[in-house]
Length: 510
Ligand code: NAD
Image 1 (cartoon, rainbow, N blue to C red):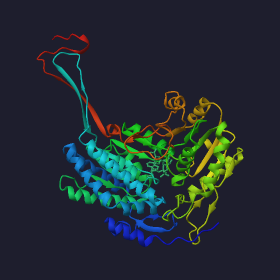
Image 2 (cartoon, protein in one colour):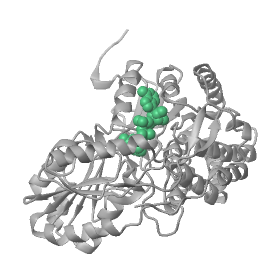
Image 3 (cartoon, rainbow, N blue to C red):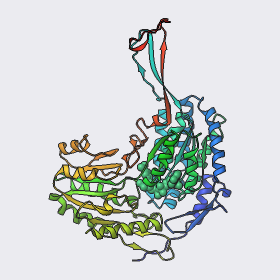
Image 4 (cartoon, rainbow, N blue to C red):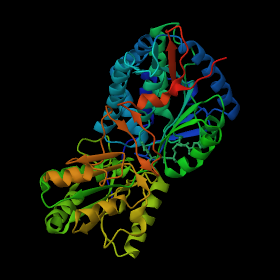
C-alpha cells in the first residue's frame, strides 16, 4: 500500500530553529546529520564536539558549579521557573520540532514539552523543600540532623525517543539541587537539543549574572562523548537513559570510579487482563500503550496476558483496532502512529516477527508501506502476535510496535510470567476485583518500578518517581524524592551539653 507523498520539512525546521533562537552556525556544515524519520531526509548538519571539547566543557561546568552551589536553593528555583516560562512561550515550536525529529504525532510532541513545563513547576516548588531530617540523639544535650548538599557536575545522557523530556527530568531537578549540567543528547535528535539549549540561554539571560555562563552545556555527538562523561572523575553523577546494552557498558565504568549512576534502561512491559476487567476501557488502555508512539516508548506495552474466559471477547476487538488505526505522517490530523526512527529499527522489528513466527506466533499487521519519494522513511502497521507461550523474542525488548498476546488461567501464573523477563520497568493489571488488584501491587505481585491498575503501563506523570528494576537499571528520575540522587547527604551531630558522652555507652577518659 502506498500513500500520498509527504512535503519536505527542511524549510519549516529552519524557521523553527530561527524562532527558537538557534544560531545557524550550530547546524550548518557540521558532521552530524540530523534527519527526520517522517520524510527520511537530512534536515541539517550539526556541529559536533570533540573529546577534547567535552573535557573542556566538563572543566567549565565544574567551575560553574562552584559558584552555583552557593546560591540559595529558592533562588536557583527562579532560573528553572524562567526556563519553564520560555518553554510555555515556545511550546508549539519545540513540540513541532520533537515531532519532526522523533516522528511523534502532534499531540505527543506537544505533550513532551508539557512534561518539561510540568517538571520545571515541580522543581520550582522543590527548591523550597530540599528537606533533611532532624533525628533524636541518644546522648543528652546533642542534636542530630541531615543536610543535603549539591554534588557537582551532573552528566545527562539521553535517548532518541524522549529527546527533550528526559533531559528536563534531570536538568530541572539537578539545577535546583545546585548541580551544573552537561547533556549528551541522542545523536539521532540533535536539533531538539539545540532548541532546548537556546531556550535555556534566554532564561539564563533574564536571570542575570547569578547564572554562571557554563551552568548548562550540550555535547553534540555520538556515544564516544557519552563515554567521556562516564569516565571523567570530575562528574560525580551520570544519569543515562537508553538501551540495556548501553547500561551494561556504562554501569561498570561508573562503578569503577565510584560515581553515582542513575540508569534508566530498556523495558519489556506487560499487562494482565482479568475476567472482571472492563473490556471497553481495557481495549483503549492496551491500544494506546502498545501502538502509541509507534511502540517506541520505554514503557510501551509489549506483552499481554489475557484470561482464557475473556480472550475470545477481547482479541477480535483488539485486532479490529489494530487494523483501523491510522498510520502515516504524524503531523497530519487523525494519525495515531508515525514512523519508526530508522531502517535499523525496522530491520529489528522484522527479525523479531520472523522469530515469533518460528515459535508458532500468528501475526496480524507488521508490514511496511512506502511513501512515494520517501524511501528512507519507515512506516509500519503495528503488529499483534498471538503466541502459544512466552518464548523466543517475547522475552526481549524490540523497540517497535509489536504486541505479543498470550492466554492464562491463574493469576499467579500470569504474574510469574510477567516477572520472568530481564527488564522490570512498567506493568499493569486490568481488573475490577480488589483482591486481584491488591495482589498485583503487593510484594508477591509485579516486580517492576511502575505497577498500574486499570491503565496501561505507559504515559507516566512527572509527580511520581520514574524508573525500573533489574535490567532497567534501578534508577529513579522526576518526582517524589528522586531529587536525592542529585545531592549528597551529610549527617551532622551537634553537642551543646558541655560534656562529652560517647554513643553506645563507650568510656574513653584520658
Ligand atoms: P541507545 O542506548 O542506543 O542510546 C541512548 C544514549 O546513550 C545515546 O545518547 C547514545 O549516544 C548513548 N550511548 C550509547 N552507548 C553508550 C556508551 N557505551 N557510553 C555512553 N553513552 C552511550 O538508546 P536509543 O536507541 O536512543 O533509545 C531507545 C532505548 O532507550 C530503549 O531501550 C528504551 O527502552 C530506552 N529508554 C529507557 C527509558 C527509561 O526511562 N527507562 C526512557 C527512554 C528510553
